[in-house]
Length: 228
Image (cartoon, rainbow, N blue to C red):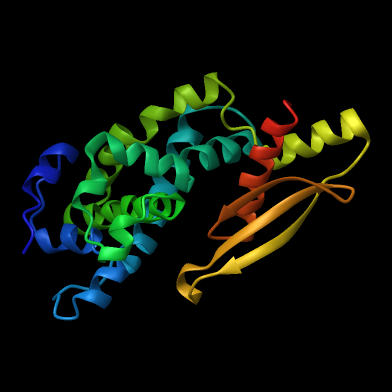
């Protein structure tokens, strides 16, 4: 088995059941390549961790800020999206501990961001099962909620798609439209490329594991292209 002790020190959690953490680090592709690996992949833990993360963040926002629901929703989305979670995972070098197939291990592009974000949620699920809600909340506070003041202070929660629509209507009197240009990958890991258009002009493209995320990436690029 893989030694998880260094990661445990970095995340400040001493697991009673080390296999839970190992499972959180096990990507589906690793099992396809190593069928004798005794543990399951991390997708069920990710499902659990996603719910724990959302509850902890929502509870913190509700208790800390008197702002309306719409603002709290935007702040939460900015904090728990895949790109942000992948970025936070660098604090404790999660990428170095992931169990991936040789092919996945070589791919350091956008797909790796989603693998790391999913693994972050799986680690939260593993902590929750091993040591309960309070310890999971402590991990989320230490590594994730600590990012919230910067998000609020620097307006990093603004939804790119809404902002691009607002600017396009204001500057040009046009409502942007989005079209799927390409989709690929197996059912459990679909990827989409979406283009954002002003009338018939393609302004920018974006990729993601859902049409919604791809649209957001396209809008982010379009804001840069238009210098808005």
